[in-house]
Image 1 (cartoon, rainbow, N blue to C red):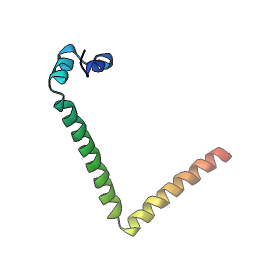
Image 2 (tube, rainbow, N blue to C red):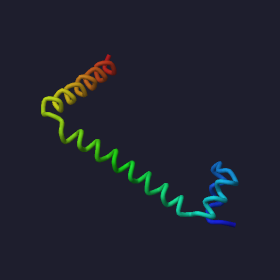
Image 3 (cartoon, one colour):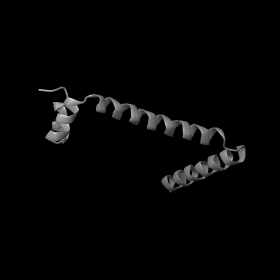
Image 4 (cartoon, rainbow, N blue to C red):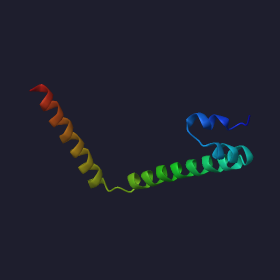
Length: 77
């Protein structure tokens, strides 16, 4: 009974569970890589948002307002 036997219940093969039980550092590396990728995505989104020109932000807001107005017009008919 290893600490990664619960992976069998979510569909991992017996070989994969055996590898994780033998080398648990692989699971740690997987988690670290996933967190790093998520942080990169958040950083890229922030850079994109922070470097938008005011005209771009206004155009984006106007587009949202038009969609909202069209949606409320449809529901009121």
